[in-house]
Length: 253
Ligand code: IPE
Ligand code: IPE
Ligand code: MG
Image (cartoon, rainbow, N blue to C red; front, side, top):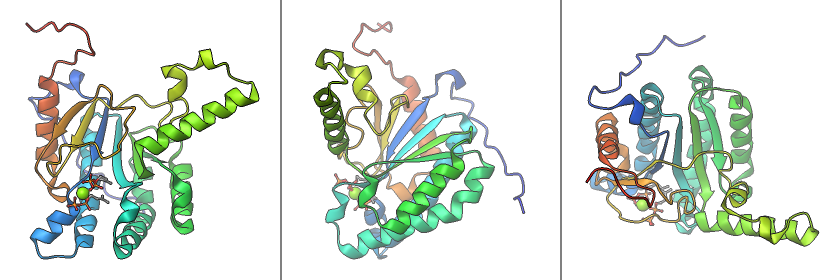
């Protein structure tokens, strides 16, 4: 049975439709602190973080953003207590299965990037199923970085390229930025235009090291579970006030 048609949110009038970021990336940080402030276990923060992600995905779709990439689990997050890691893996699996039908209705194409081999087998199966099922959807591309590390991604690309050279199928002189990108997990996707980090930390934490070379960075003190459409609106307003120079000379002064 299909759901009732849902309300489509209008783009706020102070945003210029023609100057929206094509691709937004988010370091969804602060779930643990959100829970701690309420005297709740950290896992509750992760649960609420899923609601915030669903909401953001919806606004991205409605406001005409083509790609959303989110950091769900880093290569360093394995160092957390086992209960938290296990909870997160089980949560990812549950959410994926629960949301698949709605993703189909909303034409979302989901993709996972990261070293997926280390994830539990049952989660890997869900990941493969969700990617396969939504493969031909033509709406927003949702990329979920899971067991993702920017350094690991770059090292892996180097190994693959070195192998090609060793086999004699690639000349070292042919290695350039465009070729290198083809070996990254994110091959074929344009770089993020806007990188948002919640919870106030002023660092990248190993996220998309190559791809964010010229992303505009927006950091808010708001903790991820509290990140709502108002917060997103503020981030987009800030983005639209920037002059992206890409190393060239600006036109504003
Ligand atoms: C981000 O929130 C979610 C993951 C890293 C999985 P945190 O769990 O890092 O929350 P804080 O930073 O400890 O508050
Ligand atoms: C980055 O947040 C990873 C994710 C949001 C998944 P962390 O909480 O792991 O980063 P640090 O430890 O504050 O740098
Ligand atoms: Mg954190």
